[in-house]
Length: 409
Image 1 (cartoon, one colour):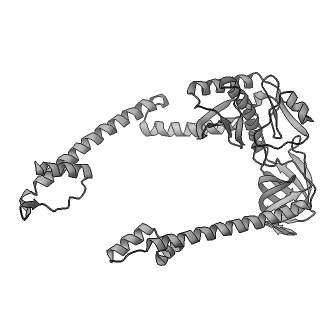
Image 2 (cartoon, rainbow, N blue to C red; image 1 turned 135 degrees about the vertical axis):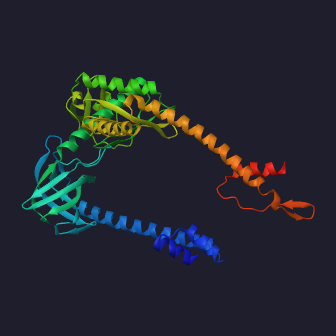
Image 3 (cartoon, rainbow, N blue to C red; image 1 turned 120 degrees about the vertical axis):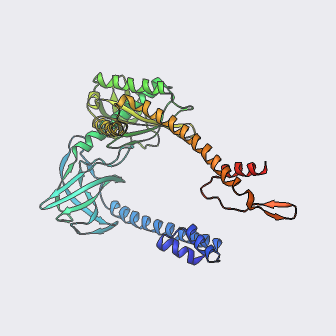
């Protein structure tokens, strides 16, 4: 069992292949011993992962606890100056980092949105004298923004002045998809049922994902109605009005609070007058027309009574359509047909494959019977019984059964 595990764990050698080789050499594999070693390895890996995660998280929390909350100025700006307050490598605080290092950076103020409310953190760069740091994600820990990235050039030191610059295109995509999420919830309430509510969401740069309660699946007709209604709102160029107000006043005004979110006494209300009003800390467009178009790309069930819609809006739509267009053009080249003819061509091919498969089964049955009848003179008698022992390669089980029946008859 241990030797088989070593082959599997160290060299990636499949257990099934070890068993086959062992059988050929009249040896047995201790399966119980193998499973025991696998269980130990899983636990070692789990313990190691937990230990690493706790160590890194503990170091981050310790650094964060000594800092004031980061000033977020990213609602109105995509670029701002900042001072480096802490640098971490693998969760450990350092005073200096250089080219190639993967770092986590804490600064006094930032235009980068920190992942929250379903919206992922911004991308961008931190720039300094001969310094470029590519930021690929930002999270928040007790109000402190943690910027993760890689130093592409130069050296970074504590108390260094940097220029924090958000990637504009990524922000535009996130803004559009977040506003579209609000419109989607309102449309679902109108088309499906007023009781529909958010049970989870993701606002990414390339798409949005919205989970909601629904006792039954959503029909194609309902999805089309939802999509049409949202695109109508987009074309109507509704303004997005954002205000800060006491939470009790916001709730009295009909603002929706999102599932699983925590709110303070003062909340940010994102209002699309006559369409949507939600408590939200995310980034949004200023008018619905900035979304351009909204397109649902999938709808599915993810849990009992919970449905999921994935969609795209704004600049993300062009990327989605270009990807689909490439697929359609490639299929057109393969089938030598116009896009409108592809479906008919695929259906025709499916029918042809079914016919060929049926014909092939018949041929295999006939071949098996012919091979079996050729063995009639090779019978072996044992008492009053007659046997034919022969290996017929390339014949499937059902064909062999038919061949055997032909001999009996």
